[in-house]
Amino acid sequence: MACFFRRSIAAKLARTLHQPEDVFIPALHAAPVSKKRQSPDFRVPVSTLRMKGILPSHGDAQLQAEALANELNKDNVVEEISTGPGGMITFKVHRKLLVEKMLEPFGEEDAKFGFNSELFNTVKKGKTLVEFSSPNIAKKFHAGHLRSTIIGNFIANLKESLGNHVIRMNYLGDWGMQFGLLGAGFEQFGSQEKLNVNPLQHLFDVYVQANKEAEDNKEIQLAAREFFQKLEQHDSQAMSLWQQFREITVKEYQQVYKRLGVPFDVYSGESFHQEQAREVVQLLQTRGLLKTTERGTSVVDVSAEGDMSSCSTVLRSDGTSLYITRDIAAAIDRKEKFNFDEMIYVTDKSQQNHFQHLFHILRLMGHPWAESCRHVSFGLVQGMSTRRGEVVFLEDVLDEARARMLHNMQQATTTKEMADPGDTAEKVGMSALIVQDFRGPLEADYRFDWDRILQAQGDTGVFLQYTHARLRSLIRTNSTMAAKEIDPSLLLEHRSIAILQHLLRFDEVLYQSNRDLQPRHLVTFLTKLSHLVASALRELPVKGSPDNVAQARLRLFSGACSVLASGMRILGIKPVEKM
Ligand code: ARG
Image 1: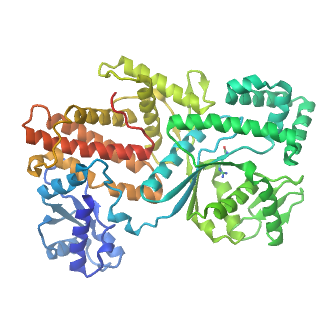
Image 2: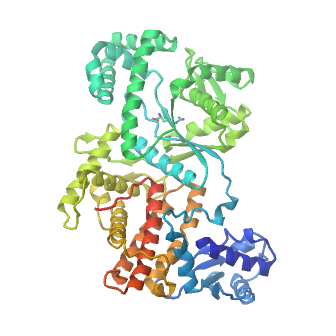
Image 3: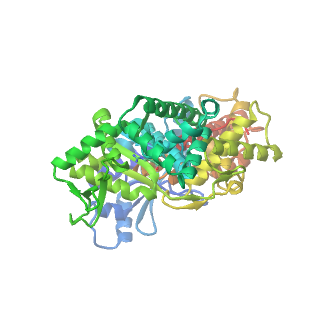
């Protein structure tokens, strides 16, 4: 196990430097796998020890590293201690022990490898509410919603796998002026039949048509306003139509999310917080936080200096609430209902200001937990379209990924016989999309290109799936071979050591991801793992090797396969068995 080495080296440092062991756990990093044989496995930068006040911060770092390396003793775990450039102390563990310990957890079926590392001892566990996806009824499900869906799912998976209780929430855009137009439009040219057959499409069509007509038709504008007023007054007829739109939409979405493998615990929405939004305004009023502008709107001063240089409108002049008012109410309600330890909102960066204002207002209202709210924002994607044109529904993206990947698979000579090629194509296609999306910093914008992301070569999701399928097939064909005990001395080749060294890094990658919630660390890790596996498969054949060698190699490959699969699952990718 990776943590065995981490603990053992930390203990060694603790003894020499007279500090508690825990201090050294996060200071120890798995060394990058190098082409050089016999490269070290772990390293500690002297700069970290200086920063922590363990070593004096003056003097030459390189000399300090050398002095410390001399003081530390080798033992039956560490066989070599030396220094690297830039004041780095490096540790190489006994090769046989590395093989033995690293392959230990993979003897059993369900490996918790990486997730139970001591690195997480100091990480607080608790209840995390992740709000993501959050599309708007009758409107387009655009690339931003897709990104929110896959990023939010990644964050929820990660938090869950590290032992937090996670609540996955979808906050639908199910209230606001657009429902006036949708309702009025539906009364004029809607069809119950079409609504039943293809609800999302029909609601979208009605909304688009109503919008168009409203441009120069005063009557429909009026009807829209009236319809929304009826909704605000909870008129039963208007409410029942709205209710129907909402229910039908949620049902449709649930199916597509299921297809994508993204579950939600709660479908909330802006409509839930209508009444509470009024109370929020009252509360702001009594706390003296509300100011009325010349235009008759009510605002809260959210400037750092309190000089009104920046303010947020919470009430229109006609007394109706806004997006932010409902968000304030929703946040307070969620804290009361779920008592979360942290809440994460996932939207594109155009809403950065909105969330800053939201958190600021919550603080002004005296909610200290506003500090545990976090907005994870991401960049814009251009050019995501399908053969039919612009992406309108989430389903379009899934269909497109499936069709394109199926086409590629039919062209490829290596494609295996499988029971449901369409299903495999969809899983592989979506993994291509996810990996492309997760490769860079979330904040970055990018241009979407189906052809590029679906390439089998290069660092794509297709490559990860392909590697996983190859490993699974190897394990399946040799299932009768698998042995309980393996001889570690049969895995001392450079190719197998390189894989094990790389696996030493897995807990660190999870640790880092949990800190900044960026999926790219995991993508890089899994891609590198797949490259190392590809080389090892070439040079360390199972077939044709003596039984004990074949068994040892099989264990190595099943270990790699299990880490690959669990990493992919956290990213929201469903690993395929064959492709
Ligand atoms: N429905 C919104 C949109 O499509 C996203 C909601 C984000 N969450 C929130 N609590 N404001 O832009």
